[in-house]
Length: 467
Image (cartoon, rainbow, N blue to C red; front, top):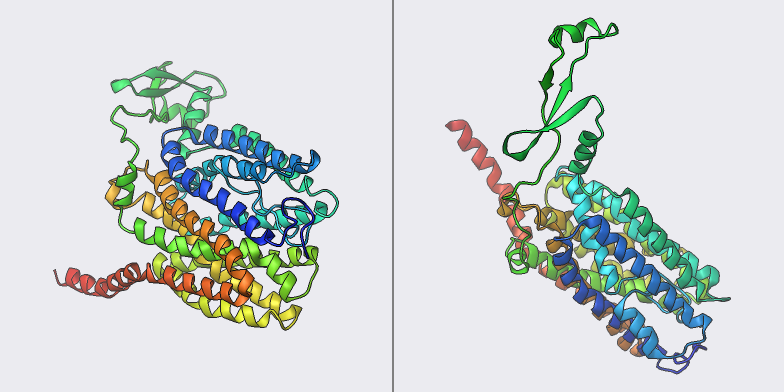
């Protein structure tokens, strides 16, 4: 079915949509590298708030293109590339009324490095895979909600498919400003400032010391009377106010972050893993429409099962990597299983609804599992790597490098799919399988290192016992 909204009413509408996807994903990839460096030097709460408000504004502007009957391709590309838009243009045509996820342009890059840094500040490495796997499910939940929003309004007023999510993200930006706590130490500072029983005095080296004042009252318990002197004096207690020292380590540089072991390997792996994931994200509803012969709304609803599988895959990847202590090996195994699964999906999806549902769930888990693990737990691990010697101000930059490199693949995947789909969907799936194997290839060195460390561990224990 041809599109009915100019300038997408020509036979080359697939190429135009691919070019739009490519424009904002390129802006996202470039902006991500800058965002990590900036985010390392600004308060996370304010940085996120400004980004979310700007993102909501430009998403609404995209929807206003329908309200004011704007048919300029330059307008939509400018909104996409410069700020924030939606990943697939929700037009009144079968090719594009299938999927919406409020997506990332330049301002949206403020989000990911900042939130990963915030979560990394609160949780250590012990169960980071599980915790971040559960937390990362919000991306798939957003995809599902976006699809449902688009499906509800796309046939009657596709502009609302952008305006409503834009308002939602702006409201959440305000919520973030008032309620986000960046670091556990912030709670200690608030507690110390609001503690009524004690008083704070300037102590040694500019640190604040909190004193507990004893008062002789008749209601004083006997245990407290034994611990405190009888006279009214100030007893110093352990300070709870965290004061930044003058020698606080500076934020890491871009080249310094690249030198952290594993950053380049995982970045290149994510480039191809994200290529596969985003190709599915952008083109899956259209493929289901063609292969399963469903209408656009049904295909959009069915495509959400890929995200449901992604939620399960992300959590499983986190749990397994926590238990084994091998992030790279976990990703490699899932990537190895994903390639034949992709081929199976291209075959089975033509045999009815039941097999399509099953393969969507499996593909979603195996494709998004490594992607979710690398962008969350792996990024947090590398951002707090032992080579940094305790300097935690590298987390945002490392996350931005890894996700920014992955976004290059996210930009290429939908573009290539738009070009290859004209020659048949088989070529698209061959491209996806090739990318999957390339992602696996870049992890082999780290996998070997993890396996070698496991073999050498028992020997070192024996040697320790002998001594």
